[in-house]
Image (cartoon, rainbow, N blue to C red; front, side, top):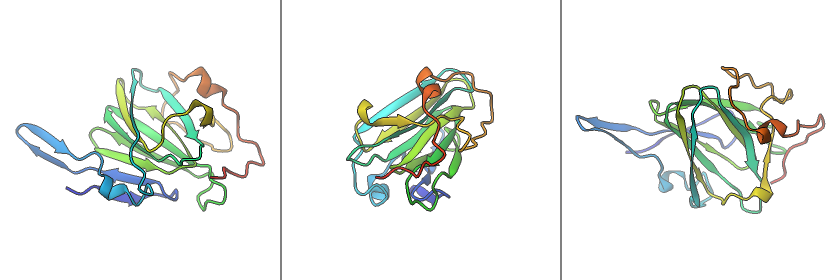
Length: 185
């Protein structure tokens, strides 16, 4: 049961689809496979698994990224409900610098994304009670966490729904400066 892996317009961002085996009992899917993804994550193991439960449709989280000596890859999957995942390439010199990719994640689609270091990540829930699962190759470190506002005019991100919930922290991130040249990893 191999994962289906496709490249996206952002360099290093992968869209992963898990095949389902179904019978009268229900279904079975492989959600992650180290052997399939180790080359894409430079062999870094998963160090944390986190869950995000979002009660309200229209909730926005992000855009977040972490800068530290250890690069952090993330695998994000929606295991209940539906969310529009938003990834922005902030890497200096990247061929996809400041490009935004949107991927619809849902339990029904049984898909996930692999986000490379230097990309900001966020999402908007498209259904009530949506739940996302995050697999991280790095440990969370408040000292190295940063963010970009989802409404930054340089990014021109158009959300499908009005924002119903967003944290004070996410609203207070700084806008990118006009001369932002990117993150050096």
